[in-house]
Length: 506
Image 1 (tube, rainbow, N blue to C red):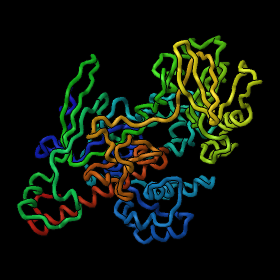
Image 2 (tube, rainbow, N blue to C red):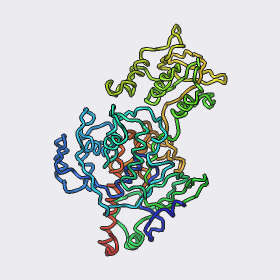
Image 3 (tube, one colour):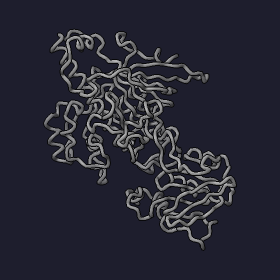
Image 4 (tube, rainbow, N blue to C red):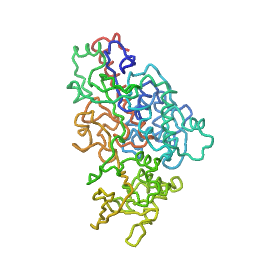
């Protein structure tokens, strides 16, 4: 059945929704949860370990966090996110987590159905997004309770799935199943549409209000128009839904607000060197894992080249190492570079990653070393080119070139989102104009408390798109967006009641 026919909408909205969410990973799921009317309150007996924050929370204990001043609450808080609301909600859900404590959340969540805001969450696959495509056996970097979403403790869920819980860390496969189950158990399914592919998100018109969302100089005629429709057609969303038989059913939706929650794993970053498109060069862990599982690299004498110094590259090293495949590991940074992610991970909690880092530091390649060994590290090197005879040319920081015969190459140097459905592919939304959006280097520029794009009104972004790559922090984005929408809704209702007589507006 076509997408729009499955959607129950108010008749007077003419298939115009208050919110359309693009992306059904944890960011989109959490936003749907809060848009569905779930509200966080300070628990009756909770005491936050931060006395200043607790004092602020006590001032408005009767109000949900959504209805409070997020800037005031987040003032002075510190954490591993550049977004203050992300830090605020994280410290409420996981107090002092970065200091190694496992304090319970100080929040309780209540379903207040009268706060429901109609919305749709559009995703290519099942709820959970990219987690369904990650290597199922690898441990996640975060602890299970940091991966959970509000209202369903991950430990309680996983206890029904595992016989023995040996580690607080979990696999991507478990996380993907948890997110899919979460949507069902929280009653969010009516808001989700799978197998949907967005081809364009375009603004229909621009108001003077776009330049100033707080402009109160609104005519009676405008108020009467808004009173009758209440939802503006700011955005047109076009795409298609893939059916079970493989056919495509096109759809067109209209929305007052669009929230981008796509993540940043759509498109791998390329080296942009000669020969990178040869079939023996992979750009993702699933590709590499598939080659191993199909036996394509079994018994190969020549090493696999792994490019990158992040956790995904470390996963590839571990994968090759555990399958007795020799590795050449190339990365641009010095092994002592303070920005290396390994330096931020406690050894006791992440022994396998520190094993890789130890090899990076100690098993350096030299002319006299034996390349038939299981692993050779090439810090401060980069790839110059790949050749048709499955050779690669490396160059050191000093300019020295080396040539090696490979069985395969895996380039894992980051990724960026596919925002081709936006004007200019979203390049105009970042901190650095005319450059692709990336999680670390060029996130979408947003208002830090509303998550609205500074360069495009009624367009919101959250999660990795704004630099929050960890699930524990992306939940703050949902809080910021919902707080903004609720505030605007109240302002609009107030103006209509004050100037136009407010019958019919709930």
